[in-house]
Image (cartoon, rainbow, N blue to C red; front, side, top):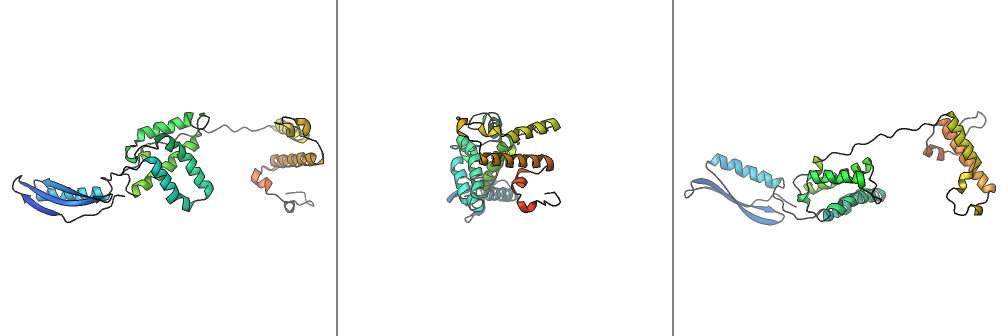
Length: 253
């Protein structure tokens, strides 16, 4: 981590070179280094020294050689893990796994916005285990997590600027909504009521018996689908219903 720490500095006029000179020390990543700054005029020297101090304070001279894989794993374990649920942490780890696979051995300070943009574009087109491309939301999620990760690297003095800031998110394509007409709704309910779908995917359908249990299951599924069409309720709302939600006397849910 780069920290602002200054030793005693001295300012004097160098008669040999005819210039005002400042000599001092600064500490970056725990290493003490000497520094000499010169200028023709004393007021110019003061501006240069103040500018240099500010650059050190902002981590401009940080020379940490941490690679991306090491920092991502450290960030996930030390900063993210204590503050999120396991499922969320798994999501972070999964998305950033693509980054580690591509740039894991690279030093943080060597990453550029252009190559990261190309990487995000490639994920959209050919990413994923089947190399069929990831959804725009998944790629943007990966980009968002990496941006957070590198912002934290800046806060810890490992990086001067965040290269993800120079990239753009993937454009989301709005899928066309498919709506069933009256005939299609009735046809769908007829298929559900027949119950032949219970054999779908079965290698040996003859071993599936149509008994009271399967008939009850088919009837329940039909009732749920019928209620979904009639009410517009969502799946979570349908599954959350209990008998106490039904008013049998007045005939409503």
